[in-house]
Image 1 (cartoon, rainbow, N blue to C red):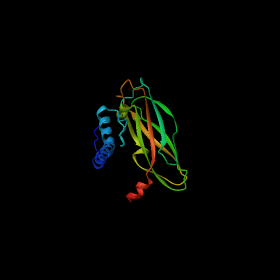
Image 2: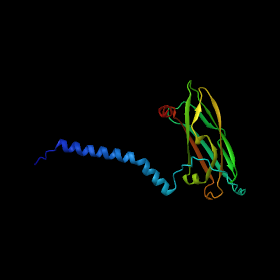
Image 3: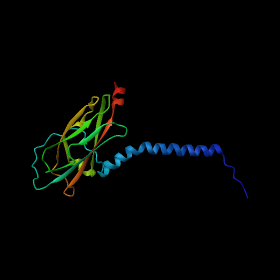
Image 4: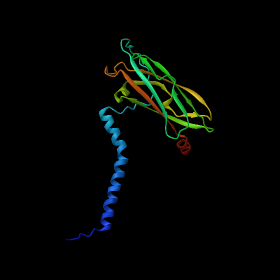
Length: 181
C-alpha cells in the first residue's frame, strides 16, 4: 500500500484559486445576464426616460390589461401601492394611473422607484411620458404623496400579449445621496 503525501500548500493554493474563480464568476454574472437578456429580448427593463406621446391611431378593437404591482425594498419603512390594481387600455391611448407612497418614519428619505415589466418583450411597447421613476423622490417625515404615471401601449404590441404587469420596487437611496454630496 503506497501512501501519497498531500502537500498542504498546493492544496490550499488550489482551493484559493477555486474561491477566486467563484467570486469572479459571481461578480461577472450580472453583466453577463444583462447581455443574455438583451440578446434574447427577455430583460423586462423598460426605458427610464420619458417618451414623447406619438399621435398614433388608437386600436379600439383591441384591449390590453395592464396590471400594477409595488413593493418596498428590504428594510425600507414605507407604504407604496398603486391606486388601482389593473386597467384595460386600447393600444395607442394615453392613460394615467396614480401611485400612493407614505414615509411613516420621523426622518426625510430619498427614494428611487425601479420599474420592471413582465413578460419581458412587452417592455419594448410600454411608453411612459411621465413617471415618478424618472427621478429620485424626496419624502419628508410622515409625508404622503400621490405620484402620477402617464403612459401608452404601442399599437405594435404583439397580438399574443394581452396582459402584462408593470412592477415597481421602491428603494431608499438616502445614504447614496448623502455620500454624493
